[in-house]
Length: 283
View (tube, rainbow, N blue to C red):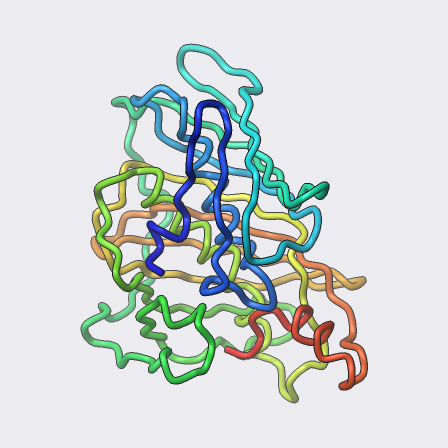
């Protein structure tokens, strides 16, 4: 199922619903994928001139593939900016709550305060065969990693860079959907960056607690996205990481980050718990 269809929100009068696809799951529906649905839900009923400029998400309980009910309500703002809160519910459980700020895109100062890393373009980087990895989630992307994660000393952040392209998706038609694809990458890529730099491989897993993302400028037209994920610090059973996303022409499209709860994996017999906690460390 392509990204547009998998994140679609149905509206029947004032009732909003969506279906969490198991094709976008990693030990359960991916948190960034669910956040993308919340972002698209925030667009419904909003001023068509308004575009998303940020989203803050709290992951409240584990979701399962299947039907979710969506509650959306204005929180505040005015003529120049509005905030909407969106909740995803399964049965009697609230699995996600998000707040999205939106505003019209107007003229103003232009400042490129963060230069894109000096890396080869996607056409010059070998591709990764994601479809043979046996995991449906990664099969939605063309991925071209730029080297391996930096093996920094223990006082330095750990960084990984790669070009990503969503398969079966043409950007530039819906600004909310274009920005939704950034949210998935920001949520997902921190933990693999950490795991790549650990030798031996850590017997720990990660559960995302929250996510924040900020969107910069119009963007959206490029299909290839350069993602730089940075991990650090980690202490007392928590790990923080952030991501920045650039277009092919060097414009910073989005950045964001998340805090994760880390704990040792349970014995091998408890496969469900181990799978859920490992999150995306099998990449």
